[in-house]
Image (cartoon, rainbow, N blue to C red):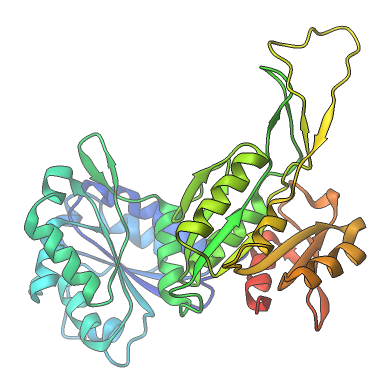
Length: 379
């Protein structure tokens, strides 16, 4: 069974008349895979783009296309509401502006008015042409929604359009809105994945690390309300990504963030290179033996532990180094040391040790479950 961070939550998804409404079936499936129950409500304009039966099929519940004497908006969004969150996706410029001035002349805007009046969490996902998105009134109305505590998922600006955000991003914003914000206002800095140290103009020295643990830690921090920066080779949704391909560039990026912005937490989830090959120009000829000279590299985590504005540090160590190395890191100032084995590199799950000054315990499960346990353990 996959990890389900929305298990037991009820989402009211409100669909408006953007062509991006065609994405809502996939979005509903993603919310349900995350464990949520989903009820759909549609404006009349949305029904001209996607048939209500499609959302009935996706949610497993009859789609609301109009509000009746049963006052469905109060049932789902009122003071004694049965839904936990209102997700308006996609949300048009028209609907954004109506919500901002309290107009409720569609099933969607009436649900929004009711939800805002009851204090229900609301997530808005804009989608429209870019010229509409740039309109001063639309931008001002989005700021009004944010000032009321509504979470606005940034659109993707492509091909002259403010396109609906990716499915994974929308689900993450929903999870963030429902998780309580235990890391709200905190800055998290993570190094993730492998480094690639050049051997010649073609080859690199690297590791089996895939960055799955770093990704799980970054997205879990986002769910909990943090502002997250990741230094790595990849690109994760909903966080700031700083590209780094070598140990030297990773150290430079980490130090720059600490010097200019600071961080509350640093998680060293990357398999940072311990050695740098003496690079040879061109391509080493194939077919004959060769020697590669390796020079030792300083450790990024040591530089972080020595920084004047040292954040709370979570270190990672391979299993065979657990004892003395973990103790040394804790004595140097790390708050927590996470241990694992080489066999778990590149896999989606495993067993990890969590070592702090006052306790040692193990956690097993998917990388997402382990990341949640780590964040629940960090002092």
